[in-house]
Length: 382
Ligand code: GLN
Image: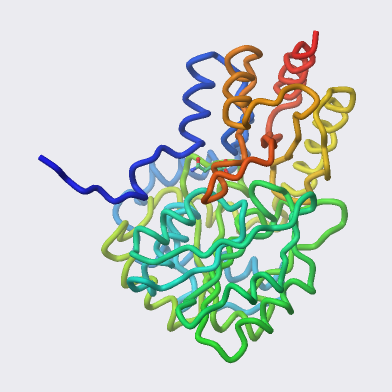
């Protein structure tokens, strides 16, 4: 048989590759982004309660009303934006699914989508799976800011959307208010949609505040905003997220969602909704900020180059030019094999695999894990 499988579906994601290698070599896994510490016991107890109670059958396609209401209240409280829980929120099995489903709800063959690179590795395959084309614009190193004149130059009559991401994976950069105004001025008067990946919205440091596309009245009308519970409640394995979009876009989104996942894990939805109803939730941003600080303090004397401390997300980029001149993927594999610390190389985040000789560390780990990892890295030059 000669089956022409979809090109975008043939590779293996770098997260699977590096986590697999970490397991194979019993390395400390600072590659794939996930916490290695326990979630809040109260949240675990709610899941237990849900499974013992009568919350084990299909949830409504758009998500449990109690969870959608809890999200609407949360956004009112944290961002002062009113969101219609029935018409604008859909619960999804994770943020990555939300992005794919948003694209699938509007992309037609040969449409173009602007992608700012380095970009989370599912964006381009998700665009291409829909027969559309990713038009890539590079962020400007070392701070990975958006070059808005380059974005403007990338817009054509075929441009259907732009996907943006702040706080940014893998660079830890965050957008300023001005970036949002630049984006608004580019899409104004066009039919371009915005897919706004805000999964790290609560992981933002040094007094920066996340500004959501939902707070920008003009942009909000044309945007899908993507969120993830895993990043906020330290439970990435629950694969739970949500998408907020105006009613027309939400309708289109649900038309696809109903035939993909249909609905999401009911007991987990119940547990998160109950948990969100407490008056005060733990401050995950402050916790991750102190982990970043701790990680950077441990790394201080090591020969890695930190061009800029992460301003958000749970990722820190580092250069390794003082250690090796291997390509980044080879270097990351070598470090995993020889020193038993797994990281993620950055070239897979570029369509053309551009190699900036940078690797990404995930610092969402126990202090003891970070200490042991840095201890192992210390041996690299000895
Ligand atoms: N978002 C996480 C990361 O960037 C991992 C997601 C995944 O493994 N697909 O590491």
